[in-house]
Image 1 (spheres, protein in one colour):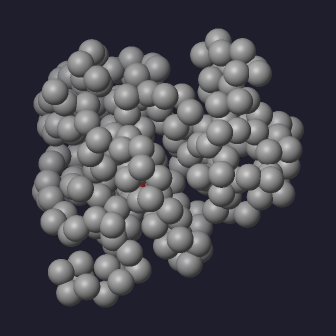
Image 2 (image 1 turned 180 degrees about the vertical axis):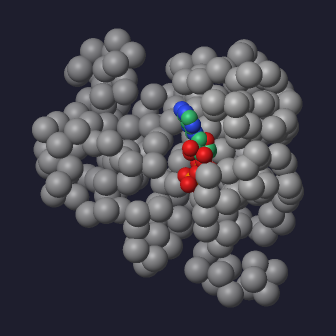
Image 3 (image 1 turned 135 degrees about the vertical axis):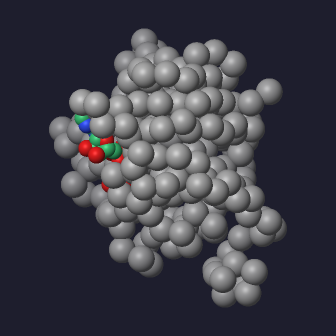
Length: 232
Ligand SMILES: Nc1ncnc2c1ncn2[C@@H]1O[C@H](COP(=O)(O)OP(=O)(O)OP(=O)(O)O)[C@@H](O)[C@H]1O
């Protein structure tokens, strides 16, 4: 059983090939990073896995069925929190859109708040949160959709490096607890190696598979891992 299976995936825009035959499988519960030069087609790949776009050829299977909206939850590069909704109402939004009642959606969101470091900020507005808290709120909203696969598009790209390291170690903790299947785009090789079971490296556009590397470092990884010779 694979959580995501991408086969011979091709996509061009206006005659310019962007993805040129991408292949990989992701096992359930695996944490996989995607690295590639800017403009190589990583977000395009995520759009196809999320079922928001259609390939020119090839296939994407998510949880045993062709990719379609609702099978994978996408956390886009910008957190897209609505400024007029409270933090709790932002997090429950995905469930409400799925038709869950507001009360049940809010109760489900509230349960996540302690582990996501958001307790006490349920009624705050997004502008009252730090950058790290905004990203945790956006991730909570993504996780709450309860999909087979999480697609995280540069989740920590806008954070300063200290906050970013804290967030990486925090994400590892919640992932070790819940074992979601995660595909994460990052430009940060250190982040990819610290968090992932595997790192997929794409070539410059048109993107092809360049490397598929397993990260043999034991879990739980910590700050000390960053100076471990094997990590370096
Ligand atoms: N809907 C679209 N119409 C036309 N061109 C597009 C469309 N979506 C993406 N592209 C082009 O496809 C290429 C790849 O874009 P994409 O956003 O997938 O790259 P990326 O690897 O995610 O980049 P970055 O790392 O900078 O975020 C770019 O040249 C972009 O202009």
